Image (tube, rainbow, N blue to C red; front, side, top):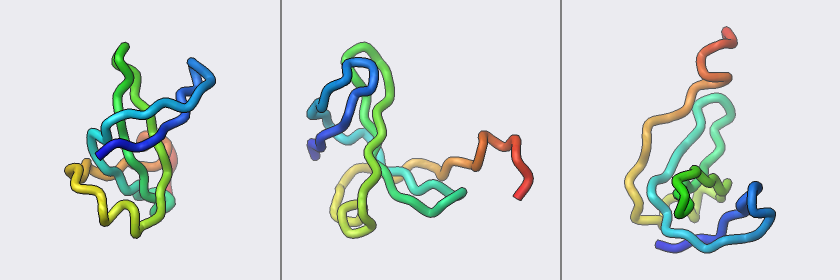
Length: 71
């Protein structure tokens, strides 16, 4: 499935194939992940309905602050 992402480095919207879906543990938000041609990772936050419709595999959840904070 293709989705539109904002590439911060290029300062432009790009269309890319969704590589995987992510649900962040720290805040419960849903996102799509994609890769640019030069290997950088792009994220796009989406609604739960869009998350459920996407056929991409689900990635493991991300931890808050990469494990540095204690919640």
